[in-house]
Length: 308
Length: 291
Image (cartoon, rainbow over the protein chains, first blue to last red):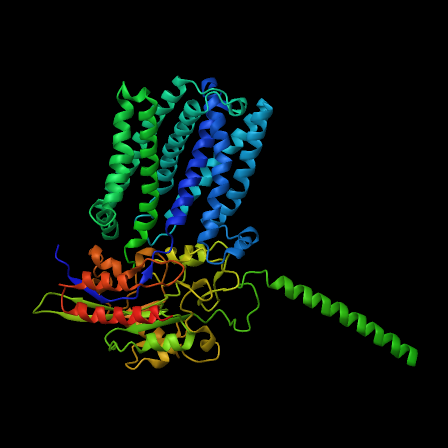
């Protein structure tokens, strides 16, 4: 349709939440997913995942301790971060985060400690407590975006689910990379092998298949999100055009969908290729880059359309 | 007698000291309360609800409200608490130009208030939504929450900032600076709950009024007469244009020569009205650059 009106002058506005926030979402996602994968072995008793699960259990608190630094960097009044600790507003998802970001790493550390002590009942306890916490610590970031209701790209009930699914994708991918790096370069390193047992080839292949499943779910969620954007209200369809045809189309269609999801998904299903460590590593890196593009596009493209 | 006197004096002294200590203690406690609970001498009875009516037919587009607001509130260069959206509508023989005044809607159900993690944003009983600058941590979540883009990061104070309805003036019985300055009397301000005395409540009762984005369910309290929907929703499909809106800096204001040049390049070959925009953009960027 021909444009009926055009703006001659308007006040300029910033993109207020930018790269640091996208990095924060990316890192919490990896942390939550690696914790959940490690509970497959230690809580749900799938023995063959134990070696990989140990890597996940170490990854979770380390990655999560880096993530809030990006929030502090992005804050205008960094020294006032303590306000978050005693001035709560439980209607605000950011306030939920200040509780979750305190509880989750503590729980992760206890979980890790009892894994090394091999205290099975305690591991199970902190695992069961940790699963909802891990889902919450990443799910709440989805709510942060979803509850900013003026922004069409964010304000969808799919957002927390989209975030969680892509978190599982990125977490599995990083776990595969770390396991392969450990098996390839540090196979005979005694210091590392004392803490991390050998990750069997079959387990890494299975993680690859798991990655393909998560990618399939993520593709479906991304597809339903974009379809709903494209066919509903004017605000939504503008955002859909922005990510499908506009300045973010390269990042969304090529980096996120084509290279980050479709290509790895197909390659991971080809019988010969999905057992090569090189292919698995390359595909996992592509997936990580794709999920990073997803975080960036979601955060920045949402604010790109002027609201007034 | 004298001993008694002394005694009573000592009693009074001790009592006074305890009282003083208690008051000091309570005072220091009070500053940890959200500002909405702190006692304001300005808090009035619940029968006051400030609002604004903007008659866009009376607006001549002189931008004096923008200037008055900047003078009154010392708004930093490059940022606006109130601004004009200048819109051109239609195709060549039938062209119409319109202007929409934008300011914080002081919503009845403000999303910024709900989403602020430290309760720095609060609503006074008279409906004015304010930011407690000492509580604000600058997480910028309110800025993305506002469906009207009315908030901005104040680069000097380093907190969120927004229109206050000139609360300091209103408390002294004056009108907001933009209302006072408005030449065409397009902006009208008053108590919405007082139909006898205030012009605004009479206008809202008798005229067809509109608010911005009613679907956001925020219940805005700035009402518009003669609001053109096509102008409100103008030009959200031209991605090139969106570049102008979005100054891609979040914390520091830096505008380089290259950016200014880049903006001009995109503007080339557009309709004539763009030159007005370019002029204003250039003006704006010059101001920002000289900071």
